[in-house]
Image (cartoon, rainbow, N blue to C red; front, side, top):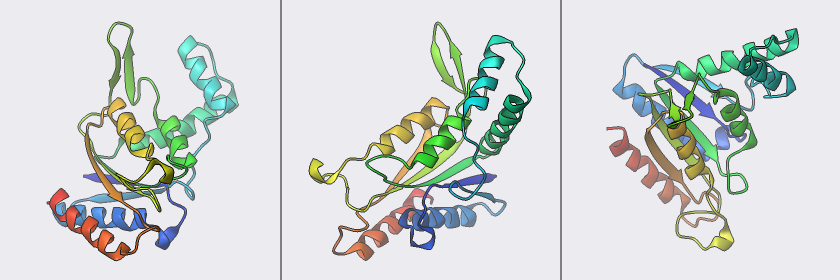
Length: 205
């Protein structure tokens, strides 16, 4: 069984979303002795841009035309990342809330791997169908100020619904949402953290 840990935080050991994600992985390891972990640090690993060459290669495939050498090279890199993504049985995402939504680098990964015929299919009469079925996702979202129930003046969380919608779009319907918040505007953050970690015991039991 393979876990792909997708880290979209820039804060290293100071990242609270990363801290909780590592706890999720530790508990998965305790449950599955044969677990293989693939660490994908989006800000440090090689993540190709979905640029002019990648789009050109994609459109060439759609229209049955030939790609040029740069387009073929770009598409090969896109496919390499997709294969890495698709090979996982379990996804563990750690996501800091940036401006009420996901970090741009995570959106880049989503745009790279979300391709027709790979992660989803389309039928003119029935619409879209996710192709990455039978997988599970743990989604850890951390925010410094925002938390559920706080006034709108303190922000919003568009990241969680967006990521849930995208995962379901590609066929990943078994999703566990784990929120760690607020991490900054909190007079007793240690208590908040302990409660989240305690909930993990039940979540991955």
